[in-house]
Length: 505
Image (cartoon, rainbow, N blue to C red):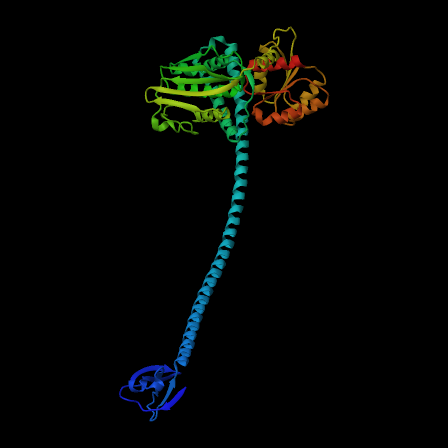
């Protein structure tokens, strides 16, 4: 390294820079010096302090030293740059972690709040569910109680009406008596409809398997609705496919309900017309016979915009203020009952052209099973044996109706008005059948039956009650009751059951 003190010349090229915090100017040496062989390969800098000192010290460096200084400087700059990048990255990562931490904190708070709200909602839903279940139970109990309370006096009304018609033949064509009988039957059908829809909604209906004759069922429906048909000057026409077997197995009661509701609906909206009940055999698959039922009328018809809603509850399309159209439950019951049969109903209608309903149900055809059931039902009703029946009933009007019904068929009848009286008379007298009311004061029909069975008495006992059969079947069987008949009842059905039980006993 060479070090000299020289003066600045006029050919100097001056550059300013910041060196160790002091302003200095860097001056290239004149070309005359650079042309000197001694400094030919060297690059020199003339450094003058910025404070204008009188003497200025110039240091000469060779190229190696200068390159080293420049490399060190570049390395430091690169290191500084990397440090800055690292710092920036660190700051970014720190910010990201802080944001993430904040987000986790907020999410945790939100989760706690959501869990708290969910817990409250769950508690509210549980309470609401319990209240809904309680309300459903109360509704079922209310409907059951109301149906029982209405059926009990209706039994008396229907029974006395029939007694009047039997005892006074001259009143057979009396419009007042006929209207009374119809009104009682109509009121009973409304009670049954309400009870039916309640049972369907509670899933308390199970289809039964009974042997029946479709022709008999359809004609029975036709006869029972003849009064309504005459009021509107309508005719009911029945057409049954002869290919259908005489006896099929299925739930004839639900089928009768479906057809009766459809025909009743057709009669309401038809005047001076015809209602056709058509039954056809569609196909046979093994022992299943698929039967198509058609109920067609030429009444007022249903507008297209109303057809989709007629199967809803309490809907009465086309009702006038002067009409007496019922509750609007009939078609809703039809739809829901067909659902139990895994069937659907179709509708074709136009204003002024009438309405056609169609549905198909598969019934079992099994000759061996059918013959067995029929043989069990066939009982010799012309036997000379005098059948002695005990009626346990607390309602005096119903006592009179039941007694008259029994004695009219040449049976002997004794009546007591409570369970304890029944236990006393059974110690003194023998009976062939007991007709037992369920809802009685002091001791109900179930407890009375249990006490009778504890005495070792195996007389057939038939529950004659206004309660729905499905509601009491389990308890009735456990108490020792042999069968159940719902009031108001069909007299022929009652005597069929009595004769079957006596023959078995």
